[in-house]
Image (tube, rainbow, N blue to C red):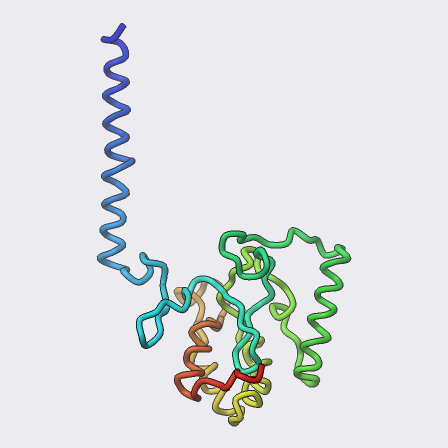
Length: 196
């Protein structure tokens, strides 16, 4: 009977070694050599080398001097261990109340602006690191006022951080919130948040 089982055991050991060890090591090696930043999570570091986030994972920014992300339904908001949408349909009363409250808050912030859809809708993952250029532009007056600078200065930073469609055809133009906020600090100085 062992003679019948031996070929199957040899195949299991062979494929385990090939697909479970050799292939993952080869893919990891190629990724580390060709795309080291992406392979390590696209981590963003401050001047001291401390990790402040990932360019691929959204995080909450609530101070008025910063670009705000989309709403998040991941855990208590931007919780990477609870990534998900709300599963609330368009007729859900809780969703309607949240959108209404968010809309009222945004109208108070910018009474003359048109509120973009991504300003009041969460992404499917709840961790989207991007906003639309329209939502970023909607926030310019609040950011400029909070930083005590001209709107043109904020607009320039945001426009310099608009990412185009992937390969020129996939997706929509977008603005990475973390990278843009870091650029705002670099260009305009860190805002005083001690009174907030």
